Image (cartoon, rainbow, N blue to C red; front, side):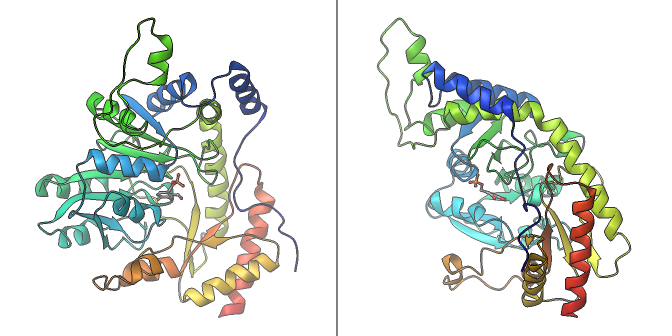
Length: 382
Ligand SMILES: Cc1ncc(COP(=O)(O)O)c(C=O)c1O
């Protein structure tokens, strides 16, 4: 058994982030304050969105976005099962029921036709993910939401830097939620952001993330007049810290070069796997620009067990990989629900996908080693 030759994922961080964090520490203001506001402005500007509301994670961003969308007890929200379980969990956190819909097996994104079939009188919203950073069929989902009078919430946890129909992700829905977990394209350690074009949404979301408080710490600090705050609804502590936001500001500056590097590595993988009859490289639909957040291949003629053998075999050769995308409905947290039927397309897509290592610390030789190890492992399971 060899040690891993390189990491599966690794954030791109450097002395700029370290210096920015040191400055925050020396400033004495470490929780949500001026740096969070600066990061919000920088990210919203990057996306072309009017407002950004930073949160402690994408999961908490999704929770707030659902509350803002009016989702609550007794409602159903249509979500992909084939997504990180946080997508479905956010619906439960909002007191509603996730209704799982199928995905397109080639893109792993929600299938609008299946979403349409699952609408009931209790459906309040559609929460879709841009899986692995690849924008979903936003036009198709928007048309369904509009027709049925449903709110549309975008789980863009993985999609910072991707574009749909020439516009960066962050502007296509009323509320769009990003993640800055270290496996994402840019990171703040942990963290999230909601972008929105609505000033009312931004203001309410800012209150909700800070216990429902009507006056922010920055406003209070800057004011020479005593202002007593009020708490008009029950809020949460979903704040990001200024320490995290300082990293975020530097990460937004780095984003173009990080994207260029990820796309360069994806081209190397694409070329190396192009002619393989059983391994399919990620499909990028027309009108979509992909940030290559996770490079997952689809493998014909295997089952989940064989895919897991490939992962172990590659790990034994020192190459770390991961299963492509999980399904939430088969996890004990949801499987106990009597009403969830099988989702054959999602299950098959999940069981036969494999994410390859990809990050800026890798080079072309690392990609070649990964492809060689995949070929060897694949030959062994057939
Ligand atoms: C599609 C999707 N949604 C939500 C999340 C949750 O993000 P966070 O860890 O920032 O809460 C993830 C994280 O992997 C994700 O991939």
